[in-house]
Image 1 (cartoon, rainbow, N blue to C red):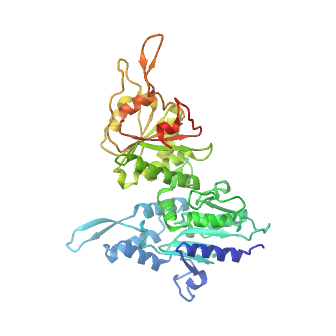
Image 2: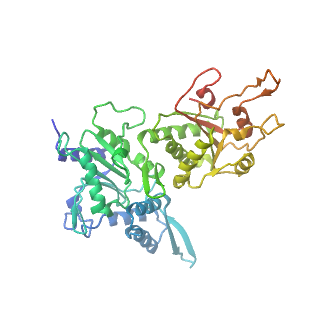
Image 3: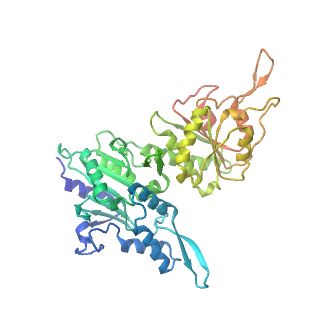
Length: 462
C-alpha cells in the first residue's frame, strides 16, 4: 500500500513525539488560530517560547539583558543568508555576549545561552503545515522543528511512489523556500527530504549530492537495505541528545575563498568520533594504556573532516584538561592538506592550529603547558647528527597524537643493525615516543595492517 503525503507527515510527527518532541498543528499557532503564538505570518520565531527558554536557562540575567538577547536573534545583521546563519550558529553554540548593570552599579559582562546543552530547560516542538508569508510569497513547509522557539530544521515530504513528486522535487522545494521565505532558515541546522521510502539530510548549502542518507540509529546496527529510510533518519538524528551534539560539535562552516559552505557530519563521521572520544577518555585515564585505537576509513569518506571533528570534540572534553593535539603525517603535502582543513575548521577547534617548521619550532609549540593543535611530519622526530635518541619534548599525559596514514612510518621500536656500517638505528616510532612518552595515540588508515613487525592494533589499539 502506498502512503499518502499526509500519512507520511503524521507518521513523522508520531516518531518525533516518541522522541520527546511536542507536536502542534501550524494553523493553531497562526495569528487567528486557537492558540496563537505569532503576531503575523511573517514571524518565523516563536518569540514567547524563545523568551521563556532564555529566561529559564539564564536566571541571573535581568529583564533588560534578556531583551537585548532576543533583539540580537530577531534582528537581521547580515544580508547573506549563509553568513547570517553562521552568525546565529555561533551565538547558539558559544552563547550571546551581554552586558548589564548590577545592583551595586558595576557593569557585568556575561554570556547568555540560547540552548541548554544539558537539555534540562529546552523547549522542543514539531509543527506541521507552518504557513509563512514573506514579500507576498505564501509558502507552507511540511514540518518545521523548533528548539526554544528557533526553527532549527525543515522536513519536506513527498508521496511515496509518486513519479511526479520525487525526493528530488522535495530538494527543489527547499531551494525555492530559501529564496522566497529565507527568514525561516536563518537559524537552520539541518534540512531533510523524503518520499517516505528514501530520506536524505543536508546542510543549508548542500547540493543534491551532499544530501546523504542516515543509515543507523545507534551507530551499532546499519539499517537493512529496503527498510524505510525516514524512520532511521528521524530516530538517528532527532533524538534530542544526538541533535544537540550535531549542532554543537559536528557542524562546521568552511570557505573556498569565494563561497561559504556549511557542513554537517555524516552518520559514519558522527559515530566514529563519538566512539573514538570514548576510547580516548579510557586510554588517557589513570591506568589507561595510551592506545586510543584505529579508525579505518574508505576513500572519499571525509577522513580529514572526521579528524577535525574528533579533535574539536576531544578539546571540548573537560576531563581532558585542555589537551594538546599533535597531527602527524609522513609527507609534507599531506601535512599541508590536513593543516588547510583544520585551519578552515577553527570554529569547532576553538583555536587556530599551528604548523611546526622544524624540530626547534616543534619543541617550542609543545613546551606550552596545555592546549594547542600542532601539525608536524614524523621526520621531524629524527635525532640530530651525533645523537642516538630524540630528546624529551614534553612528558604531559594530556597529549593526543593523531597519526594519519597509520599503516606507514609508525613502526620501528626495535634496534636494527646496519651490517655495512655497524651502526644501530631505530625507527621513527621509538623517537616519537622518546619525545612524548606519556602521549596517547590514535591511528587513521585506509589500509589497516596486522603483521608481526607492522601491526596497527598493536601500536594504536583496537
